[in-house]
Amino acid sequence: MAERVLVVEDDPDMLDALVQLLASAGLEARGAADGLAGLRAFQAALRAEPFDLVLLDVMMPRIDGFTLCEAIRAASDVPVMVLTALDGEDDQLRAFRLLADDFVSKPFSLPVVLERARALLRRAAPGRPAAVGALAWRDVVLDPSAREASRGGVPVELTRTEFDVLAALMARPGRVLSRAELASAGGQADPADPAAGESAVKLHVMNIRRKLGADVVETVRGVGYRVPRDRP
Image (cartoon, rainbow, N blue to C red):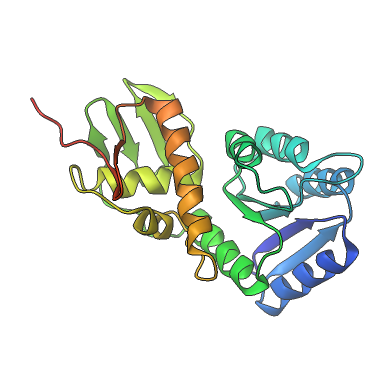
């Protein structure tokens, strides 16, 4: 069965382009022309066939994209990609704090959006092979099979991308990974605009530190990030 994608966009030309793009890739895409229509479509699908991915604009009538993202996340952990003309750091931080999984600024490349959508679907797929065993650093534990994180035994909610970025670092304690490497690990790499993916990694690391503590990820200036090699 084709994976189902909800696209919420108030620009009719962009909505049509995105729906046709996804359909051409073999996905079942449904469009909604504003935030309220998107919320209603999402809620109706929850009772029948839930969507596997949501793409949404931010600046929309009736319900804006941030409010819609918050409502979706309160009901489901479906991956959410934010597509918007807003490109300020505050807007990106707000999206990720609402647990969006990806943030793409307009204008964007349709083929790149498709590949990023595929990456989110792959990471969310129930049958995706998981790494064997839990990853642990001090009292931080990641369970790749359950996609769960905790510190000191207390569950911590990470987005899929945050989880993947932290897992890449925890799997190699002491090793420095570049922002480009972490963008690839988190499905954020954008061949058309590498700087955008690396900027997104910076925001994800900020969120990881906020949720789990500043000591979890170290910055190595001019190189990248690492989880410190633990010492007795």
